[in-house]
Amino acid sequence: MSVYHERQKWELCALHALNNVFQDSQAFSKQVLDELCQNLSPGTVLNPHKSMLGLGNYDVNVIMAALQHKDCEAVWWDKRRGLEELRLEAPIGFIVNIPSPMQLGFVSVPIRRKHWIAVRQIDGTYYNLDSKLSKPAKIGDSSKLRSFLEAELRRKGCELLLVVTKEVAEGKTWLRGEAS
Image (cartoon, rainbow, N blue to C red):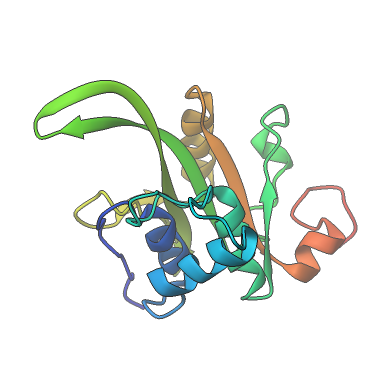
């Protein structure tokens, strides 16, 4: 199986992360995410769930609503837990929210933005499907994935979402020691 990887356009990293997790260019579109924003805040002139310029920059509420359209849920990972408690085989994939410096050309400005990236296992290998990368970055096996996620979670402001089916979310089977 080849690895599907969307590259960054505008501020559409949430869209790219969703499509990269589902390995499907048609999983979501900007139009669908904009409609979800409108449903989350009907009647607002400036929608708080996306960029006022209309270029993307969707928040976590949009990602969570989008996942529900695929009969999935986003589970926030509690960073106080050790990653050894996570059953890596349970999630469909991972969406990581990382701090990202703002660039104006070649100059980095001191404004911190957030960037959504996808991580997914394909044919037994985990990949970093960050849309800012020119191609998928091979992470490796489950131990390398844990190391990758631990390094990301040590970064100030980083958050981890598990993308799971509704059944996995309801049964908490993403967590070791919970009902299987």
